[in-house]
Image (cartoon, rainbow, N blue to C red):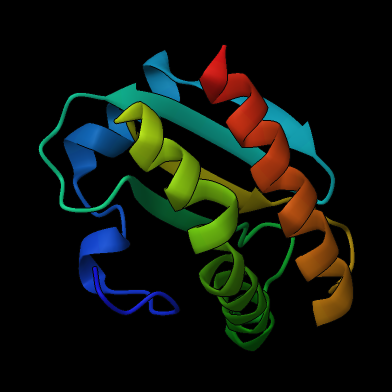
Length: 130
C-alpha cells in the first residue's frame, strides 16, 4: 500500500459470494447520480475497501457509454479514496465492501462526477462511523 493513487486488482470486488451478501445484507443510500451499497466485513482483505462500479445496461445500451462512465467514476474514486476514505477506515480498523452504481439519466462530465464522489465518500464515512 505504498502507492497512494493507484487502483489495483485487489481493490476490486470480484467475489460472487461477497457481492451477493452485499446486496442482500448491506446498507444503501442515494447520492444522485450514484446509488451506494456498503457492508462492513470481517474478511482478511489487504485493503480497507473493496469496490464494484456498475452502470446499467438497461439505461445505457452502448458499451462505449457505459465504459466512459465507469472510467470517469473509477478515476474520481482513485484520486480521492486515500484522504477521504482509507485514512479514516484504517484508524478505526474497519474493512468494507462497496458498490457504486451510476443511476443518472445522462452522461455526466468528469467535474460533476468528481464533486458527487467527494460528497458520496463523506456520506459513506458518516454512515460507517455510526
